[in-house]
Amino acid sequence: MRVMPKPDPLALRFCRALSLDTDGRAMQWRSIMVVGAKASLRDDQVEHAVTHAVAYGLVLVEGGHSVCLTDHGRDLAKG
Image (cartoon, rainbow, N blue to C red; front, side, top):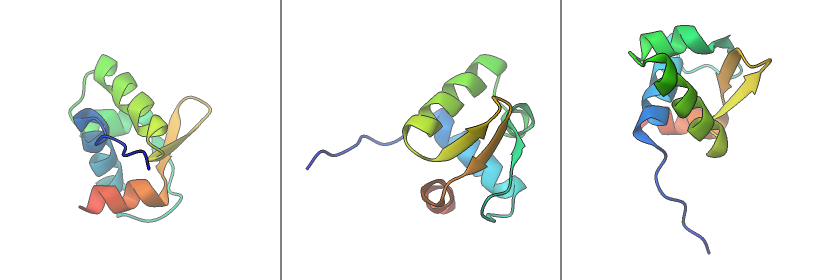
């Protein structure tokens, strides 16, 4: 069984900010850049965070500008 390393800290920070903004509700879409600003991330950090969050199955991206948490992402953001 392959063990995945922990998600990147910036991805976690992004997911927590998204969770706070959506009150942890499922399928609530938000602007990537707005969430990045709420997470106090620079533009280059937002791109890094979203890329890693997608790779770990924490978020879904729509149209390159909107994002929502997956069930796994919501669970991780709570912890």
